[in-house]
Image 1 (tube, rainbow, N blue to C red):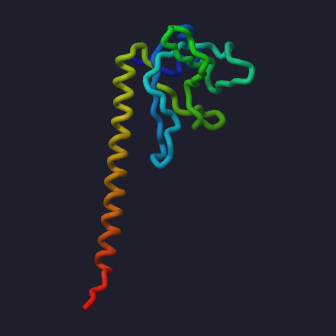
Image 2 (cartoon, one colour):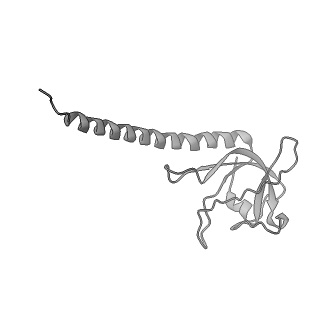
Image 3 (cartoon, rainbow, N blue to C red):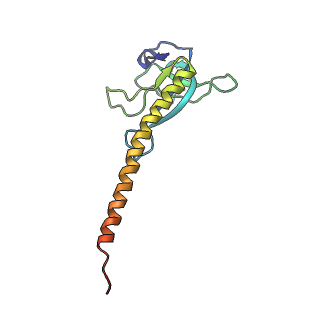
Length: 142
């Protein structure tokens, strides 16, 4: 079941284990801003952040649950860095179970596959047009 990220950002679900995922690539010519495959995480209050770390636009952050069951040290913000001043960035997708998270992850990637296929088709057509121009300009030698 999907959990509203805003409720987690407001400080709800602290101490719970949830699943997150997010693939965000607004410019297809650049690397993704966020590429977080389905990950089991622990919701942690920002009061537990190290002194030199900040998580903006949220009262909480995520830390991955390791294979041993312990909480990792990596800090994952609920929003990406595309925000500006009073507007937060794109939020992570949060789920209560692994299966829903994986389904949503696959849907996100499928949407980008469609965009990539269109880019591939467009690029191929561009090179075909370039070749046709060169073929037309071949000088006939007699």
